Length: 348
Image (cartoon, rainbow, N blue to C red; front, side):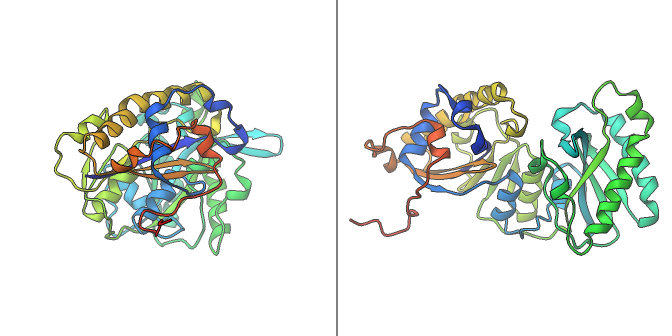
């Protein structure tokens, strides 16, 4: 089995330095990174990585696939994300907080999207909330605009990243109107938490059949699930630990998406450290054991971060490269050189 393991938020923003990584005990992860054939990949989010892996363009038309992963049916319609967010005034800037920073019930979400749909009905728009944390908007026509995923906006000023392009001005107006609808909503006035005072539009497009080298996707993330369905790959819920993948699943090239690390943008270092330590026990150690006993032919680890990322391809034979010493995780975040790909001529 040739397994691909995708781990978003494995690396902190470069400005944080070595502090978040200090004294983290990650022997299995460090072994995989030390012995594998490494390539620096630059910063990337889960959304951008998955779009590239499934052959979708840089404008990220991902909403219909995520909707399908959330249990909806996109059909032939154009859909965009309309994620619930909280905007906080900070000086002259508006800072975005995504739905991971506040609680929202299904009942609240349904009332909010009903109010938005009523306001925008004349424009042929319909808001739906198959999940309280993830809302979608059905459109009458496909917009010509450039947008940024909500996950990449966490903790950032929104001004430079509002919709742009040919239809950008119209969608900035829609953005302002949505704020007005939600600001005066009775549910927000009654909430004892951060108000849901806007939505973030991104990822507009229509679903189409996709191609992928993976025969199965293991994940609890709706976007990964929807892309798997569109590509014809099997879809399986993510197990609690990597050992479950090594028990004769019958698949040849699985993609495993482990999206359990908290976003680094909010500075929750303690939670992130605990989550990485948990991945060491539940994923990195079992998959390293699978390489050692021959259950895995190769493991390709895709570690992502907002400013930097690493891909490491590890085979059982690579584990014998004992001269490649293990280094702290932070050392890989700042590594400047890349190795040749495994099919390159490395003869000396």
